[in-house]
Image (cartoon, rainbow, N blue to C red; front, side, top):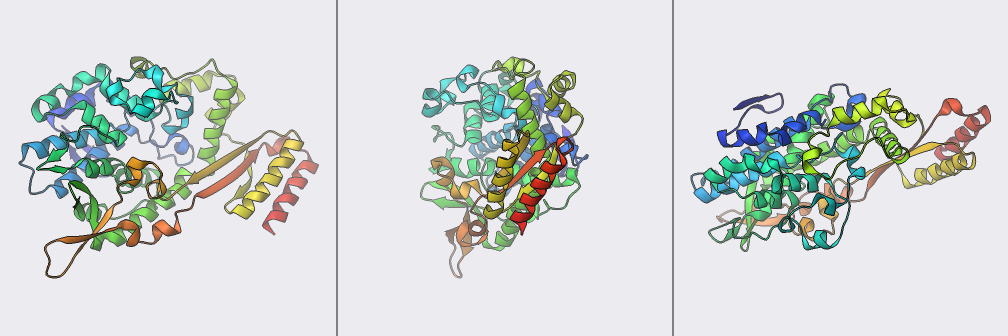
Length: 438
């Protein structure tokens, strides 16, 4: 099978992968928009998780072929390659309608009844709220989707458990990922989810293209060509050549600018808050099922149909592409203090408002306390004159962008129905805002 992609060109799909892509579980992603409400602001942003996921697999294929270019005739290497490609392809298969926007109304994890060998001990003992990743694992581990893996299991020896392990970033199957005494799980899991993963390499270019903006542009080919395997004792971790550090900087900045200008756009964030208010005020119109087979029926079209037929005022604001007016926006701690003054005034006047916060880090991996995330930093490989071996340093020693953006960058906003305010209330809000700015 060949897929024509506007971002990456022709993408070739192996015959053994076709049943997975053609299965209803993966086809459902055709009806899940990549950027949720962003199409209300950027009309071209109607691209889906379906094409994004195929794009991630294409990037993963190129990255793996670069790293293992002299070993692609090795049976064990090909098994790891196919396992890794499928982890890239399926990393988003569990996404709910409107991608992340509905994740907060998912059921509890235990309700999904995921086989215990696919869960961590913490998940087995703590019944947290489920995430789209849990639905991904459930679909791979225990659903009608599992039959579509027969061909890749037979030809390559792929194990679905190990695909799931790469997606969640943890494994107990060290032998499966080891070749000649080297454990390749770290580098492959980094390429699935890290500061330099195939997911980001695809979505920055794809989202930029479909939104009609230039912020997500960077040199993908140069970045992939300069990926390196760094051997740390008996483990292989992800590295880049020192000549690609500037390109990596550009990659980080592209993501940062996309967050500020696209992903944190005030209208799309406000729509998410309206959706949250809808779910809180109308509990019997829509729910996300724990039954994985029933989950197949839940996509953007189903949710939007429910919202269009609802009499809930927040649902109607969403379908009419209408949000309360933005009355204040803060970018600094000092401005955030002022926002609290306006918020307190609104509450004292019994004025309904929406407060939205877009908080994010340039790198959650750099500051994470999660052991499996923070254990492996991306390395920079430097060739020393007269030596065949490279010297490895952590990426944060080669670029100062991590230091500059290590603190949370947050934008806080207040919205309310200005037309429903009295003249006196409008003037008071204006005075408070001006006092803060001045």
